[in-house]
Length: 231
Image (cartoon, rainbow, N blue to C red):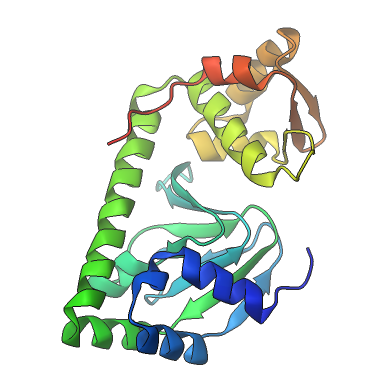
């Protein structure tokens, strides 16, 4: 991953909900923030940890919950210009964890700067409320897939999601994910996911390799998924 510059941070801020805040608030957030790089597979937030909010400057992250038995289910994905942790700033710690699925650069958001600005300025409070509303709708859509989609539909949707995010200009659609990681993401077990990948491979929809899935027919894979209704 190429080095992240101040210009990249400014671009991410402007493209996120933070870009709607008054300039003086944005300037203070940028001045007090800190950029940190994380390799793929890093857990950057664990359930119950102190509230923390970050802006994704570059990368891909998965927000997930873990059952007492160790099963995982995906709540949402976060990409470039997404903000994580607004809900925990407002409501306190929650039982979710956040993991990087690709090398990621995260810019910390000083919680006290944002909350104090929201208390004194209705424009900031409204921007935070809008962001929380977007996150609610996104969570409902992800819940619809998790609850009503078959395992095969969830696998197809997850592969497309990962591959489209990781794709480079004029590059192939490749989801860099192991069978176990894929099973964790869709709330299933590796054996079931392995069988589904075999079916997709025999249908010439995907080709599989060590810790990666190459999508050969994106349109057909999309037909195998169940896209949620936009709320």
